[in-house]
Length: 257
Image (cartoon, rainbow, N blue to C red; front, side):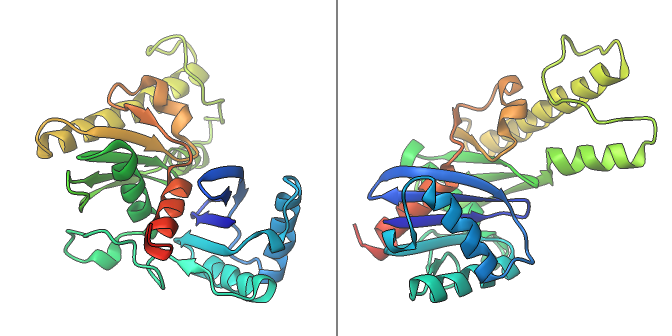
């Protein structure tokens, strides 16, 4: 079995695969201060919910943007599995041409998403990942990573607003009755939900123009569901796109099939 781990700045998503079948997946908070032993305790608990243990797995593949968390996962893998994990961008080449001024600037999660989206939906394609930042990644018809855009994420943007404006309090992020708010909570929901949806649609439309006018558009990330119903440009919602990409990379780059 394969354990796929996607470590983001805010959340870590874990997937257990038996061949191509997802046996279970979990989302936990990313804690850069956790040791390998502490992580092992957490992971064993989640795996146990599906009747699995460390002994169930033959390989671990990791995409991480948090270096200290990567080191802890390496420590856990060496101690409890007694093998080295495959880490995208470190000891595992994602196998995608990166047409950027400095390819090292691109986060491994974005490359993994690009691979998955191209394999599943074809190209050209655009991946919109709603995470700590909202990222937009463009992939050519041939599967090349062309570049993208980075915008402040929904959660950190709203957190900054609430902390800076003393008279504004947090609201539930669900669709309001209309754009013109009749009270403060309604106005905040309108600005957040419709505002971020408008941002997504405009950036996607501009990227599609540069790509020739058409592209498959895939949304992923933990906060996608907040604004996805209001986005007219999103064609596909794939919450586990990064895990799928990790599984694809393991199959293609490690197993050679």
